[in-house]
Length: 199
Image 1: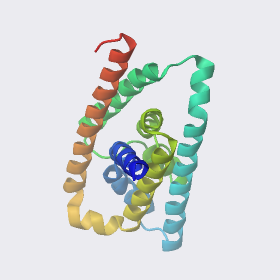
Image 2: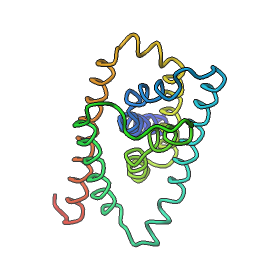
Image 3: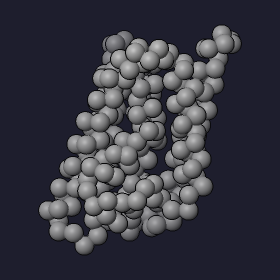
């Protein structure tokens, strides 16, 4: 029972930061713009490609991240500080943006949907830090669950856009950016405290 409780605890603490980092609400308008006027079979193909690309990219980074750290002599706290700064810059950039577009769209599910829109620097930074704190398995499960949410959201993207409206989607995306900035500050704070042995 204790192991199950610990797993659920780690699952909750990994799922939420990844959900915030992915920010599915900023992906939906871009997906709709990319797939406007396309054949339904092509839209399904783009959905499938984007999720597979994001999954493979995320798992590869999880597998190789620690090895890269060892080769370069990077500590966990170094990465927390650097990763936190990157997340903070990305969050501020998205908050200041007047639209939800993060890059120039190309008509493919691999780029920019799979990478860097679904899995970009924010997600990669977040999953590496979460792995160190909460373990590999909960992080992989949370990452996979978030990709399922993205896939489901893309399947009903048109209806979500009609329900929430463009302004509603944008507002939710900005809230996600604020949460991402808060997570970034926390990572920087913990990294600095550990580096300089501050209690």
